Length: 547
Image (cartoon, rainbow, N blue to C red; front, side):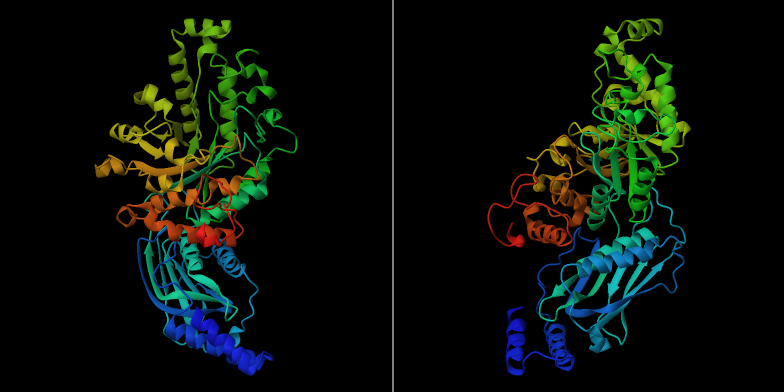
């Protein structure tokens, strides 16, 4: 880069700056040196995150046309909902957002110019569901008269990932004042290792506005995460409108800290256009105190406000109504029913519940099982498959529906036991993948392996993937992004990249993850430095790339 800048400054000094014709001469000079010598890029490292399955690259660079085109000839995807078109323009926007573009690419020889992106999608469907094909191929050539990046994908959602990878090989060149694609020719063949790559956000402990949630969704796409686990309600607040039971959101913190039915539809639609499924959760029976603000009969008593009243038929009628309304919004095949941290002691201390237990020949533990299994049946009746936190498996795993996915969070070894029993599993062990644990460092996020001690291929296939969890007791709009990033990105590579390409020592990827963190900052995402605890501030003045 020093050689280019020295030559540039010498030329500026010798001939002065002025006029479009002179500017064109200078651009030609810059293009010649960049394309022929490949200075200005770090050719020792490929700064793509997460690392693709297969990649080869060269040492040349091309300008991106100021009028970059999207071509879709040969594609079977009609893009009636503009998923691909909108993604293309978003890609251009994030690439160009870092600086004012001054280069006039219309004067550049076409052999030095990337004219556009040609995308071919083989499936006509835009259906987004668990297990959708997310594979893609990306090729950026350096030879030809009219150069186009080539993307092939089975589905539009694979094409979206290809555009994200494309965006990461583009940068602003300070000498030419234009956007360059570097390390070309580039050929990528890629697909995710796991089909479930999630991030949990919690809007009960602290309300998050729609713009904040949308910004989180956008940032997820940069790291190729594909499931937003929306922990909507909990003991503290019930912010979502449920038309079937309109008093439920009386449990919100305030009238302005609520999500309308239309808001929820908007979040799901926004996420779908970016290839992200939204997993909704109601955490029953234990985390539900806020439900009784609007419907007090859900509380066993005023002294016992959770778990929900297992003896009251209205409890299950209301759950049925919630899931009926959910089915109009949340189209992901899974629904999360929680089931964790259930303290049943107050059921036994509440006279009418204790009487019901005796009548039905149950103790409190059996009533907990009864509640979970009945809630599962309701969810199944609405066409959902179920995700439950691991306590349900630990207490009565053999009784769970075979359509249950067990969500591991308490510790290690659970996934191994779950898949041996033939059930599916998602890994989120709290010692490694809980973002609210600020002492959980990025290195631990990177090294946490979902398939630990699972060697049987059939059992490995039952591990759907993993999820990083951002519980919001101490998180609101002021610190959400720096709590998530860059540690979530470390887990994202673990979930995307083939096992044999994952670094055994996380320090081997430090520079590349630092580069990605700085890329997030350039895109307006408040990702924290790698050094220090979660969401730590920079320790002292210095370059982003040194923190």
